[in-house]
Length: 85
Image 1: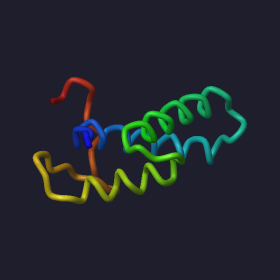
Image 2 (image 1 turned 135 degrees about the vertical axis):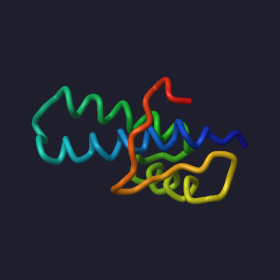
Image 3 (image 1 turned 30 degrees about the vertical axis):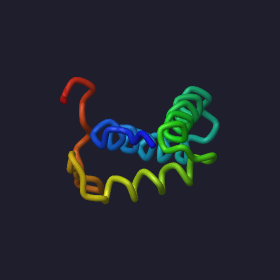
């Protein structure tokens, strides 16, 4: 099974969590919801899960596993820029 790059996945998960907070704070904002749904779909595809909640949980588990890239996740983590690899 192909697995996503941990740096790209960490960046996507960071954006997913940030967008999730934004949508919860502004549930009637269609632009926020659309971006959140697009990010959630991408996360589902990368992780091979059917729901965003399952995909986020799978991503968090995968990022905790030792591997080629070690990334910092959690409250103190810094987002990775698109060209920072």
